[in-house]
Length: 324
Image (tube, rainbow, N blue to C red; front, side, top):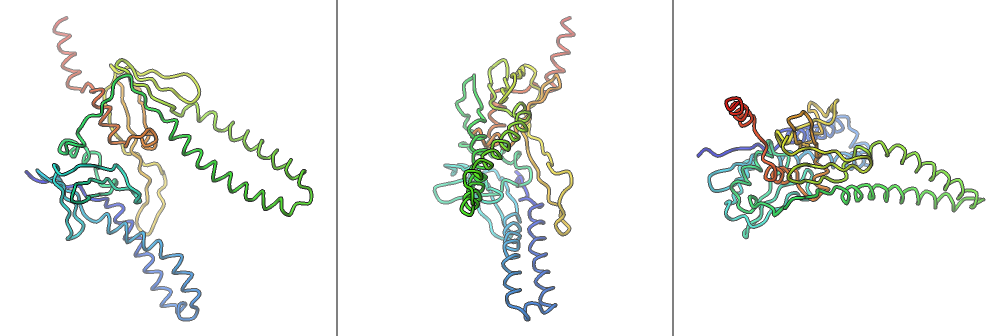
């Protein structure tokens, strides 16, 4: 059987090469201009500013140069002439993402670790094939209906983190300002008034968004109930499910140019399509907030609800006409 080959992200490979090349050209230009020889401080400043970009470029280029191959009995990750192989039967654990940027998908055996970038081309197809071949990944989760997908804890944690950072910054600035204040009570009053007004404006701006923000999804055999943070729930009938899939969406209309490469922010929302034209969208970030990787959530939903394909729909329509 011919191995199935997936390229490690050529987009990030090209961006990495571009970053490293641009920094190298900057060094050449400064050397030719004689700036480094004239002023060591200038060289140090330029080096400190540009080296992180060069390092990131080399890291992205090396990490995303190669491929992931699936053979009859093993998964193989190649980087140039280096090759790592792990038999499907040897996988004893997995990690859906690590601390790298972008994160890796990690497979573990008793003898070692094999990892590849989650930005690998056709990652969801790769995961689906791995799920069929690696027994550990293919084990169905024990989910009984009704099943609740709760986005609240992750949402509050992410919001709380930013609120905490902003609070610390504002608190530090306030403390510094009050130390040199001549009338502390008056300054405290105006600071408190400003904080109240600012909070009111933030809440007023956030209310319309909260009406659209998903708080939780309740899955039952007959329906899917979407409960927002504010406002009434929405009901979707499971009998109307047409397809469950992941789509690729570019979130930036005007990509930023880096050399001759385009940097695009690509998202992969999970979409449940219904035959009446309705769509239920679960963003990547929401899946992680609920404790699921997007690909595992997709597989779980496909196990819970097996969409009626078009061929089956046409066959059913034909049979009904004949009976009539």
